[in-house]
Length: 174
Image (cartoon, rainbow, N blue to C red; front, side, top):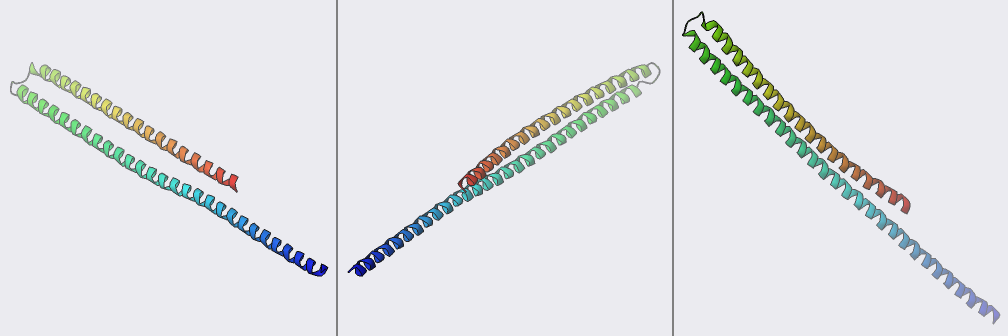
């Protein structure tokens, strides 16, 4: 009878041990699933950050191309204006020279010199104006470029901060 009771108790102990082992397996399995799920979340977050960064790069490339296009247009416009002013001044000089030449020489030499000085003065004034406009446009372009770069750096800083926080969070969970 005692031997039978001991066998029953041994069988009961084995069943309890098997149940405890099975429960431990289930607990470990759930823990592994939770860790895998957390890693998947981190991976998805990193993947989203990468996509966001690629979009940012494309935006910056587009903005840079636009700025380059505007810069080329500005230079072309300034060159056209310079050519128009030169053509107008050349026509004016030609007109004055042909009018003065038809009147003879002598007293008109002083008049011609005065007219030529006035024309040169006007040309110089136009050159100065054109130079100021060009410098102003270049300064505006430089400021726009700086604003773009500052924005880019801020976005990069934000991205890197998010990345660091993600890695820090991942490290905490490990």
